[in-house]
Amino acid sequence: MSVLVYAESNDGKLKKVALEAASYAKKVADMLQTTVTAVTVNANYTDVLGNYGVSKVLKVNASWNDFNANAVAKILYQAAVKENSSVVILPGTTDAMYLAPIATVALQASFASNVVALPESTAPFVVKRTAFSNKAFNFTQLDAAVKVLCIAKNAFGLHEDAVAISTEDFSVEVSASDLGVKVQNIEKTTGKVTIADAEVVVSGGRGLKGPENWGMLEELAQTLGAATACSKPVSDLGWRPHSEHVGQTGKPVATNLYIAIGISGAIQHIAGINSSKVKVVINSDSEAPFFKVADYGIVGDAFEIIPRLTQKIKEFKMQNA
Amino acid sequence: MKILVCISHVPDTTSKINFTNGDTEFDTNGVQFVINPNDEFGLTRAIWFQEQQGSHVTVLNVGGAETEPTLRKALAIGANDAIRINTNPTDGFAVAAQIAEVCKQNNYDLIICGKESLDYNGGMVPGMLAAILGYNFVNSCIDLKVEGTQATTAREIDGGKEIASCSLPLVVGGQKGLVEEKDLRIPNMRGIMTARTKPLKVMEPSGADNKTKAVKFEKPAPKSAVKLVDANNLDQLIDLLHNEAKVL
Image (tube, rainbow over all chains, first blue to last red; front, side, top):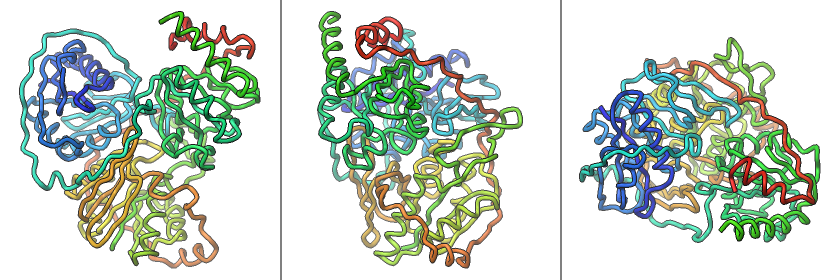
């Protein structure tokens, strides 16, 4: 009867979103007066989950390395059956969103993604989620016996609630048909903070005038330990790769701090970044729509401000190191 | 190759979102509807297969008669024929189940959906469809090639991409990258004229159960006004980010 959580890992290391999902699962388990069981696949040091309320870990040591959505969906399905779980919690990552609908069908469950708050009620089971690309919230009632939820990144946060934890090896038979999609190759840029993992994102728009001016933005990002991003026109012009395009039709950003430089703030851009907690805008045009949604703003010349801001942050970091 | 492209009829990306009837329904008043952008990238890729490899492209939408202009636009862009399943789509699983029925009757080799629609952002239809049919599935697909019965795909992952291969039939959840923004097509007059006479079949829904229900909507709370910091006083910004916002 426990609440099940998929604790996602990368190269054996649990992700922060796994701990966030565990924190959420623990609160739901409290509402349902039950406990939390986590499933991990090829993860090490899983005992940390106990700090976030997980009582039991079902540890899968898979023979395959590359992520396979069908295989992980099957693991989740079998774990949910074994634990007789009525609620299954996943993070909102690319991989979790890939596998969750597959597991939902197997469990004949109801599914909700982009969940931003604890259930409003558990009978009926109603959750708040973002919809219309962050322009609104939608309260969804999940009617099936089993509920599968993907939790939006950074919406719920980490909540420590330490409990005693036990670990069980868990093995699941995966058939050849589950492994129908075969990974050939993974191309990853290394050493850069990705937008998905970043706590801070520094984003540039057409106001930066050309790709040659991105050096100062990258230096600011590096100083902050931030990922770099850009507006749609910038990626359409080819100044920056498409993978950096954030907005309604690009990547969503739900970070602690979003700094928009030379971005006017088209409605589609705002929709994509609006889940970020704190937004700073730097723009020479005081009428730019971004000022309406930002927390802090500076009207001025980006080329003049960025280097000084980078220097100030360096000094701040030195003093507070 | 027989391709099915599933399209959603969604508010234009510039739309202001409002609700009506005690915040229980989306207010369509004054809203322009378009082909869901993620679906349009997939449709354009399908038309590429049609032109380069002789594929037959069917577009499908689950929705009422008011969504037909969106299907006609897809026909004007180049799809061969269209299917509308005549029911109001209120639940992702029910939509996937409806589409699965059509797939079982028609044996498509390739089914292209958008990875999510820009209205409900559920992101569940392609995965559920693949699971119901037992087909191979690639989500967040940013490149797709087919030779014979073998597909090569690229999937967007955090910080890069993953190249995979699989056999058909295949369901993909597509997005930008399947084709680029500049490859998208605006229907020309000839396309619009021929679209009028292309077959658009209306099918009644099969009985699939809804597993979720949207009970109400809410708009984000109005934001407090921006705090402006003088460009010559960056220390103040650092102070605000550190002491007030606590993000530094």
